[in-house]
Length: 185
Image (cartoon, rainbow, N blue to C red; front, top):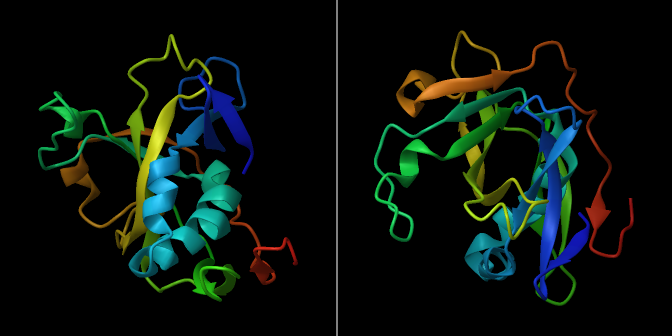
């Protein structure tokens, strides 16, 4: 994941499918430094492993994007933030679990949980004028139960709002080799 400096702050930048149809092959999704620091704590190490093992590697393989949540969400002064959130979903063949400790953090790939889809929650960037290269911010990622009928959709997806975009026919990435934080494959 490349590191990009915007306004003197360094952000990790990931790619996602361009659901806007403006000719660019991908859109940039930023990950704020405070989000990464929070996930580095012991209880969030699995999320940190998933960031580098799944979000970074496979977010461009997103199969469906939903807009809105079935529940209200309050972000800053925006009391209707839940309706604006995007959920990027797909079905990876693997999960990433942490290995090592704080000084030698790494991760290993294991088989993905059955009947689950991976979901990345993205908030749209409200200040596109000041950060034009960042379409949105990855806020959270996790596994959810899969819909039994609609491929790559979470269970009860109709409660999430509306499906904004879908791409059918992509094959998931092959099961990767182990990776440690020193770049070993």
